Length: 367
Image (cartoon, rainbow, N blue to C red; front, side):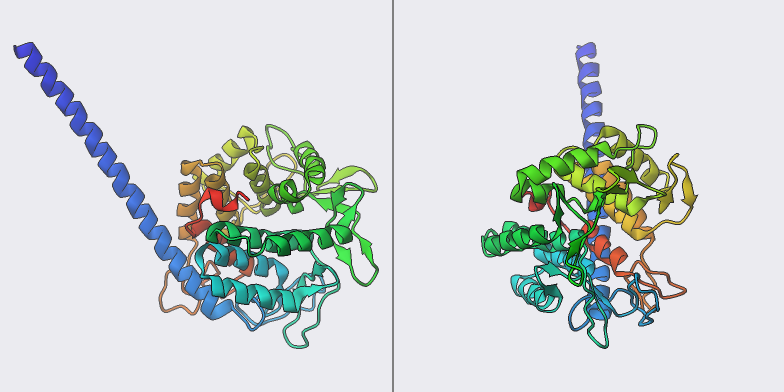
């Protein structure tokens, strides 16, 4: 009888331990969700109140434009920002907000079958080229909107935009980086991170197969499980001087979305995130060129974690992202992921952080 009683007590003890562990895990998850949701709220308020202009999202919180022709700055507008903000609105905003911003984006950026990549603030000058990834991201937002709101409102629009874009930027079997309205020519380059694989899979299976082959062949090595940056159609070679982390992560995100992200890449990313050593630029041997980090890199890591259902990667990346947020309520950039001292706040960091922190489900991107 005593042996039976001891056995029952032992089982009861194990049950209590398991119950406590389960309750602790639930509390931790609840605490994590609360912090993430509050961070999203503050970040969204900053973007909506401090970076939303009359026709789009400012490139930088500070209104200081540089004289560099190839670099947007200050209160210039980018199609990149428009697409990222539309993705956020598609999943978290109301229908009226999304439609209004999309209509504004199309009215101001869309010209001759493409969304021009940049518009100056004062003279509203439109640059005469696009960036193909930005067009695809805007098209994706329409599909995500329909998925989330269970409608087919934008299906025809998205398809027509894709068809017109393809006519402009397709060269051979690939979507190139851009089309020039002035020269009426496509780029000779195919940037791997520009290949939105799930979108290509939906609209053009032949293009998808070619893009997937090109991207997967751009895998550098198991030791450095990152990706080449650019493939030149003329030389038929990859060209990568340095590995820009954000570009490699965008490539990894697209691969993850079609179930093709190698385990080596995922493990490398988790290791870098957990050690807080996810840096902006690496050389070909996988050594950091400089030890600066960006909110956008950790945001992309979180999005990848969410996409592949790796909760550890997702949570670790979000936790690191939260340490980069400005929490001083007296600061003019409170809630942002900018530099508290210089007040430099870049739209790319802000908008990707919104997507990482927003309560986006995996299936929202399955269209």
